[in-house]
Length: 307
Image 1 (spheres, rainbow, N blue to C red):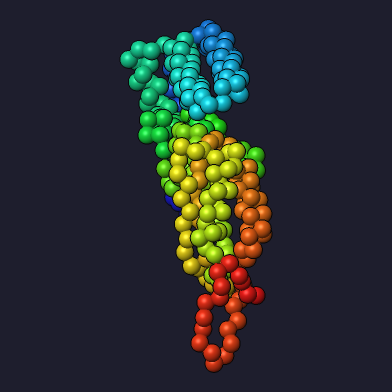
Image 2 (tube, rainbow, N blue to C red):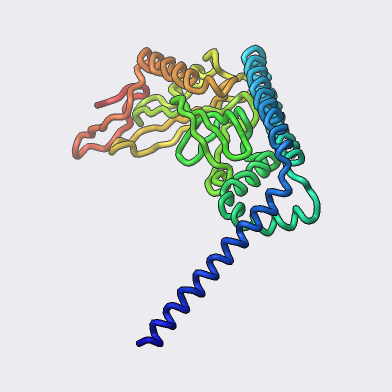
């Protein structure tokens, strides 16, 4: 029994000595790291960081004013704005690091050995987002100003930063997407750097209605809208579908809006025009068609529906 107690006490003492040695080693490493920090440089880097933040704010405000004044150049202005912000971040980080740390082979060895694992583990997501941000800048799956669908959200890309992408949805909600998440989901860009964008619109009429006349009405409503981009064609496609147990004709128009930010006003304007024209021409929505039992089926007159 005494031998067991002595063995337990010896094990506890050995563990305490090992822990004490580890704490002493950590303190020594921190002391050596502190020797390579220029505290005066740390103080000098604070105005650099503050100046960089002010410069970014000035660039953003100036870019916003230019975008409001020259709306046809808004995508280009926003691209320049994003690029300037990106390089200001990089330059500020490099200047602050050069002022605050004495860079020599010994410093690199000590700092790398003591902090590599801890910093790498703590900042792995941030580093992944940073690398993904650089990849986005060069691969360009989308650009600032694009109207994008991502992860069930739909809106305009307003900022591409080092860590995340920000989207302003059509409900005016700001969505923040980490850069490393962008490559794990499918991203759909409606305009990809251009102002104009295709806007698909769906219309449904009864199978006994005049489909050609309805298609012409839809096309004319698109072409006469003040939001249409006339340099692109306006195709209207038709097919027969089953819509909630109704047999219907589906008309899909694919016009272009001259500026993607007017997508919803364009869609609303065209739908009002089409509804008014359908009402005037007597073109009816889908309905159940009743045929007499025992008589051969015959197509009803064009332009007249049965309900």
